[in-house]
Length: 391
Image (tube, rainbow, N blue to C red; front, side, top):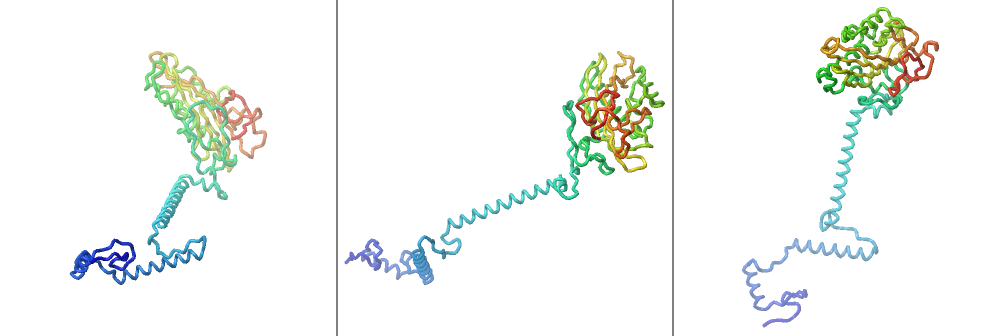
């Protein structure tokens, strides 16, 4: 006999398909025998959890009805049936970690920059020195077209900062500022001979303008040895000028010299800037053209005043092939030598440069047009005497 009641044998009105008496009897037998396919009654713990969840759902529903427009407070624990909220939390966590990583990277980069360039911080502090970390200028590769800008800080040099306030602060030190171009065969001279001419000209500039022996007024023997004794009149003229200087025989046309009883160099650095080129001369010779400015920081003898004297030299030398010229192998001939002096007495011809110090009387300063000794875009005629606009 079968039944057609909607509730079915289980007595549940869930709309399930009716089960025949034979099928139900078979299920009962399996249950009594402990078969795997028999229905099992939920455990007491499962029934308790289910009832608890149903009660919480009903309580939340009542809350929604009582507070229109507001979402009920969530009773679920974190992570329980809350997939989107949990994902949102992960997104926020990732953003915080990303922001912390970027901030940490900025801190590391900032620390490295301050380590390499401490003046970025110290120059903004009281008493900070803006010239403590100055990037040097690149080498001069073409004639300048304008005067350089003013240097940092006040224009008054000190023993501790002899180039403070001067454009030369960014210039190279001494021989480092005398760079030679890449040599190549020219004028019938081999690449090696041209390179020798360049190096010998650089050495002549060093011995004549940077050697301490020369600067303190002693005889520049090393410089003289670079010159060709067979060049008519040049070597003899320089020897005569060094021994008995006067207006017609002035060693300053080749050598930079200071009277040690009047001034001495501050420290051992002379700032240098300029360039050197070469070209073919007459067949069997190469000519080298040098144009350099030297800045000398000087301390008054017996005092503490510091000043600067600026010397610019334009020099042309030649190396001749002895087989084609009356010349000594590997020795230089001087074809032209010109000079401009900044902050030096004009009408004294004793073979020394005489700088002016801040406390000197006005009559020690030269009269004439204003001259910027740092302006390498213009050349002052030899023998001109003007008032320097800065030292």
